[in-house]
Amino acid sequence: MFNNLKKYQPFINAGIKRSFAYRLDFLLYRVGDIMGAIVTYFLWSAIFNSSKHSSIGGFTIQEMSIYVFLSFFTGIVINTGSSPTIGQEIKDGSIVMRLLKPVSFMATYLFEEVGKKIVQVGILTVPILGGLIIFQIFISTVVPFDIFNLLFFSLSVLLAYLLNFYFDLCFGFTAFVLKNLWGANIMKTSIVAFMSGTLIPLVFFPSELYNILQYFPFASLIYTPVLIYLGKYDNLQLFNAIFLQIFWLVIFYTLSKIIWRIVSEKITVQGG
Image (tube, rainbow, N blue to C red):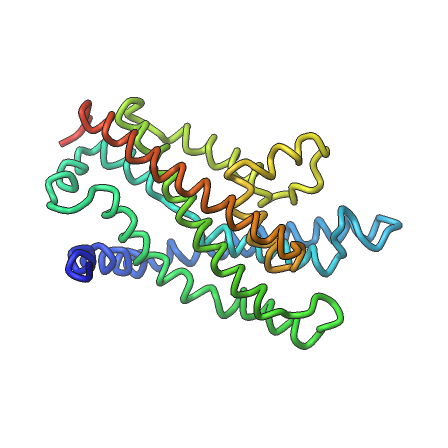
């Protein structure tokens, strides 16, 4: 097993080097993410200040503040660029070089992303997640810090990333047919952001829509991990939430294998 993992070490190294090679690009994207979180925070603050109730949708202003920043942090961690990469490599023909390597085609994308995540998580965990934990510890009457919630949150985020990766991989394979995924990727990103609870917690949606969306795979990406961290689930709900993430992960992993077998027999590229 370890010998097989050694085959992918160069891809991990490539992911790390690529992150450091475009440091300014990485920094600007992260500044944009933080600015988006700050704008969203002030928006929700205005909503709560104009409300006569101390809580809205089961969230207090303090819980919503944590939700906003934690959802943006989780979104960065689980973000995957496999489908844009596949689309670009098909356009310029460089995907041929990846196909020629004596390793799993899909695993090469996964381990490249592992390298990128090592850099991203390493840089962002202390200022964002660490800041939230310090805030909870020193102001424990607001939202008490719970180490078990943090551990289950970490597990949930890992499952969410793998789920998002294989979902994005399935979507990326459509590039073998569509040839260009630029517009489709923008549409996909917007839909996922809306249905995952990144912009608005799903509980704020109409009850009929919420009852449907909470079982969709997108809810498992952002909404589920953040609610686990906030301690919004009891033991049974926590088990069901983790099980649902594993269920969708298995579904999309299997789909990625099936779709790859189909499209790999009809490969054409525009470049090369």
